[in-house]
Length: 394
Image (tube, rainbow, N blue to C red; front, side):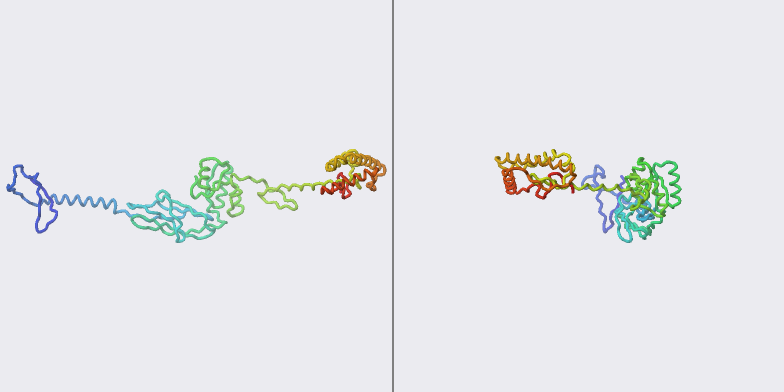
């Protein structure tokens, strides 16, 4: 039986533990075994070749390729934003740690999903300002940086950075829009992209319109491009939004007004409300008005009713024993009003001298008692200022 063994270590001696299963079955304690030892060079060469092949495979798989630095470039620039793009990252066998964007030597932030995203948009930049950008790639095999890219934002009069994606437009409007875009140096692209600055359409529907809404891209009418061309500079989009209220033609300027395009005429302010009429003042008992309204002259009976009603309200505070005397006073006042009305109609006079109440002494005493009761009440004697109980013409 030929048994091949590999020598692990050569020292002052070689110790070999020969497995007993390899011994002949009739071997027992004290038996003598002859073992022939020789070197097998063919087996050694085969083992060497197998080892070298395995090393070459490992080197080809994991040692020949290295991570490469990202290649950065500017895709588009506007007055306030820059769109950057780079080639797909080559990591070889290394693992990605992070991909960061630097602006003017300071870290602006990490790129989310760097293995699938190859573009980014930086907004909020200053107009007509120069910026420097570069990427820093960190992997398990080391840190690599991209070249530095210098970008200058556009001036307000530079319209070349405008990138338009069109939506639903009539044929004639689309042709006019294409011609205007070419004249101002802008460009039209197919589909909504990261560098799309404006979405121009006349109808708010469609897949591209929905995508523009998701990306917060301004959706404007074709009139915005015409306005930019006329003014020779980029304009705000607030008045040209698709869902904005369309303004009519500019109104004609009138004296005292300033008409502007896109403005609406303000409604006239409502006229101030008329001042409330002066409060009605009541005359003293049995005293006619110095100047009465036409209504009181034409209808003395109504005036007498009003006076009678006013007197009734005041007589509630008097004693029950004085009610007959007050009724006499009111009856005398009514007759007196009728007489005064007839005299005014005949003489056409505005005022009359103050008449006296015809009656006995009891009537005068009842009037004095009534005035005393009113003073005790804290009330004001009606007609204290000499006015009639009707509205006084001011």
